[in-house]
Length: 427
Image 1 (tube, one colour):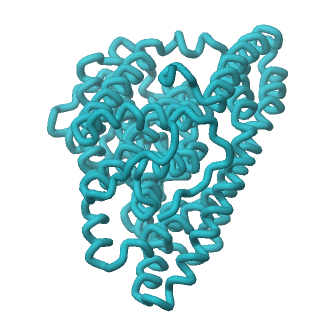
Image 2 (cartoon, rainbow, N blue to C red):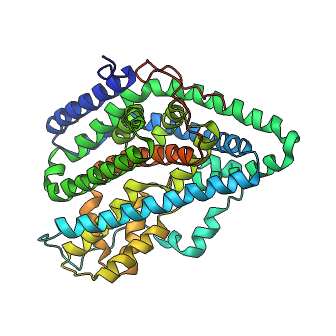
């Protein structure tokens, strides 16, 4: 039965997730001393740390090469402008929906209501100076593409790639060898990805086990209303995205969901959207999204289309305000959403970026920033949901833009066939 045969990689990752939970719970109760537990967790997280470093090693060259190939295959500036406009229109629309959904659910559920806090608490130790408009613009442009790739600055890599891709496109015939070179680099990086992905089940197991060893399963119960409310928000957002997908893609949306189950679980388990990037790109091309569109939309989506993060920032900001008994008017809440819409762009790859964005917003609207301590302890569990949501949002965005352009082709393989190393489809 076609619908029952799960991809082997998906099954292995699921096994890793379950084992990680079991090992984490066992270690938490076996090592009651927090220092000992932290040491054990530190060693357990070694595999996941190496895995994420390997992924980050791949991401820079992969984003650079695929985006250059995507622009190079656009053909002309008019096509590039049209696809770019449709892409950004989708991103902005999805961000607005996500932000407003976070506001709505926080008002309905009132996750922070009844939490007693000390308003004289310490200031959360997270820097926010980098989120001024001036610093954002300065940070946008790389001083060196090599420095940007070494530090994993995705947005800076995207900016350079846009310039490089447009310049190569303007060269015409002289630029084609460079496009072919970038295409070969992309194939090489995707082959390396296949090797790295063999570590995914072990990385998932170690990441989950490490978190539960130090925090314990009880950390989820302490904030069950907040966690439950946020994941309910994500479920609604997933339903909205999938419904829009069915409206645009018809019955094919079910196949897109099936193709994204492994990247979804990988992002969820490792709490990293980057870990799923190569798999998403590979599956989009197998789904029938032209390489030029998948290679263009997906890198941009990692900076501008973080649907899960959008919903989280408004939900968490109102949670903190409610915890301190602050009543915010509708106008203030919409102003918060607008602020988050701007400050959240360009933070891809920044550690704990959503916390930094939230803290900057708390400062601006005079909400006690010490309230951030209420969610820091469980942020890893929240980040898992955010990262997984971004997989759905970005895969749908690329498919939708391909549909708008009339370029969504037939699927290139059997969805349930075992996959080896990812291989980019021909343009």
